[in-house]
Amino acid sequence: MTVQEALASTALDLRETRLLLAHATGFSEAAVLAFPERDLPPEAAARFADFAERRRGGEPVAYILGRQEFYGLPLAVNPAVLIPRPETELLVDLALERDFSTALDLGTGSGAIALAIKKHRPSARVVAVEASVAALQVAKRNGTALGMEVEWRHGRWFAPLEGERFHLIVSNPPYVAAGDPHLAALRYEPAAALVSGADGLDAIRDIVAAARAHLADGGWLLLEHGIGQDGAVRDLLRRAGLEYVRTWPDLAGIPRVSGAKR
Image (cartoon, rainbow, N blue to C red; front, side, top):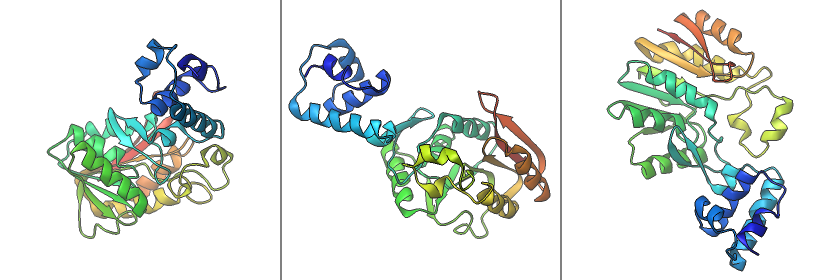
């Protein structure tokens, strides 16, 4: 089988097919495009066939490749962690617009948000909390691979942070309602990182209720949430006694992040 024949052998998106073929062969994507007549070694052809079958079954490309880029950082990912999405980069943008020397990322998963913040604020103390031991191992490996010092803590939300306060708290918590039909398309990703009660707001309620005790004076809390949840999240922030409550849209114009200041 040649490269060209392999590319034509699947019913997958061409960009995804190139990525899978490059991963299976060890060729660069540029080489895949530049040398379509190249013969594939049998073992590479078998790996590619396996990758293509997994993708046709619905497994995300990021899990097959074992990596995903986020905010310019190459991150290792596996089914223990949610795949970082481009829309979450808004949360990092908003975080970096603020003045802080200490930052906390709740529910860090792969470590994407904490590491992106640390990359652009290397002098800041960044702490990241994760309830899943398996996910925390992924985050730690990403931190080591990138050579970034983040304080990794195991626990649920603020549990491992008694008495600590931060100038900035960020989180992309679970916010999908139980029974949401979109969950079927997300079946390969960890349900605990997606689902949060009947209305999807249980995790946000828990975070907002405890956040004020962990915010320094003038500190900001920034939360990613789902479509249509912005009004409810702003109401929770106000009732928690926080000020300057507002919501920011993503590039598609969808209200994506809400936040407030102590």
